Amino acid sequence: MKLEKSADDTCLTIITPPAAENGWSGSRYLAIRDRVETDGDDLYIPPFNFAVVDNGVFRSGFPDTANFSFLRTLGLRTIIYLCPEPYPEQNNEFLKANGIRLFQFGIDMSKEPFVNIPEDMIREALNVVLDVRNHPVLIHCKSGKHRTGCLAGCLRKLQRWCLSSIFDEYQRFAAAKARVSDQRFIELFDVSSLKNTPMPFSFSRR
Image 1 (cartoon, one colour):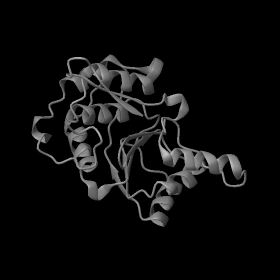
Image 2 (cartoon, helix red, strand yellow):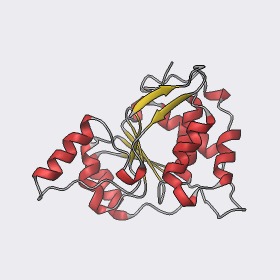
Image 3 (cartoon, one colour):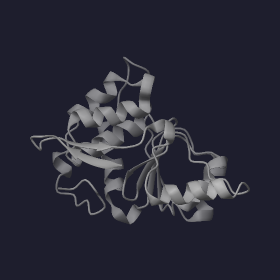
Image 4 (cartoon, one colour):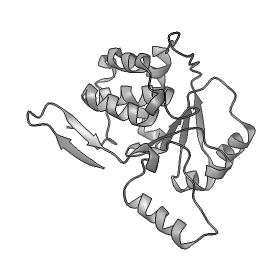
């Protein structure tokens, strides 16, 4: 992951590995990769669309039992679940066994053109993400594309990313399933009430 600034210093672009490579970067990725390669009996499998959003903040699709060993390596304190369906019992047992707190924001995502993203839920979820007492935190929905992409995009606005970089990141995860309505929601989302919220965890602060 690296940072690049445009010539006029008005647009901060953060380049991350593609979602096809699970978006994981840094020394922790190398340590996990090395262990996978050297110990075939102890494989760590990230959830679909897994990636690092920021220091102590991760995103993914819905984790299943095959991903639990990997999630343990993150030392999670919190999971933010963005779907209305009940959390599966096996996942709840994993949370209890590892002392992980669950925040559920039941965003019901219809298909376009009937998408209605509840701004109040996104704002509440952002407040959970911004509270470092909840870190490390994993944000997920079903596929890690639309609901998760909207929340991550609104966080990027708060971090003063330019829209082109926000949309580029959104499209990297949504791919062929990218929605104009999601990107319009991100563009119109008002972060003014959150601008004074401290973000000591953020690598993209100025």
